[in-house]
Amino acid sequence: MIAVGAVLVLAPDRVRAVLGLDGGHAAAGHVVRSFPDPASPDAAARAALYAALAEMPSELDPADPAKVAEGGRLYATYCAACHGPDLGGAPDWDWRTPRPSGRMAAPPHDATGHTWHHPDQHLFALTALGPGPFAPPGYQSDMPGFRDRLSDDQIWAILSFIKSRWPVPVREAHDRLSAGMAR
Image (spheres, rainbow, N blue to C red):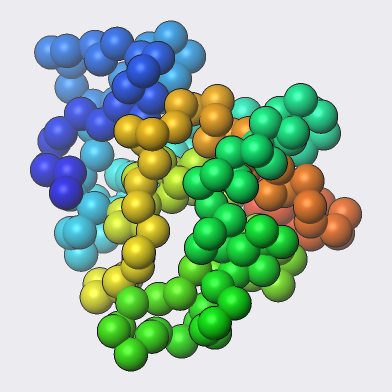
C-alpha cells in the first residue's frame, strides 16, 4: 500500500527521486509523483492520481518492430500464463465474473477485452502498480505490480506488443482515447 504523501517512483531503476520538494516531480524524463493512498475512496485522491498520469509521457509504440518483438518475449515470460499466449485471457473463467474465491480472472488483452478502453498512461500504471489504484472498493485480483521486476522500457514494450495485435479500428480508438488523456 502506498501511504498518503509517499513518493512513488515508477521507474526506480532509472530515476533518482528529487527529495524535499512538494507535489509531483519529473526527473530524467520519467515520472516521480506524490500519490495519495490508492485504497482511499476519496474522490480528490483519485483525481490527483489521474492528473499525475495525464502529465506522464507515453512510450507505447506498436509500430516499432524491435519494441514489439521485445514486448512479445516479455509478455510470454510475465503475462501469458494468466492472460493467455494469444491475449485471450484466463481460459477457465469468464473474466467479467468473480471466481468463487471472489477474485477476478485475468481479462483478455485482445480486442474482446477492456484493455484498449484505458489510455496509455493507465495501462503503464496498471502494469507497474497492479490494479489497486484504479479498482473499485472490494475489487480483488491476482494481478501484481511489476515495477520491481520490469523497467519502464520493458513495460512499454509489453504494452506495444499487446497493442500491435489489435485490429486497426481498435488501435485508432485507443489512440483517440490516449490523446485525450495527454495534456
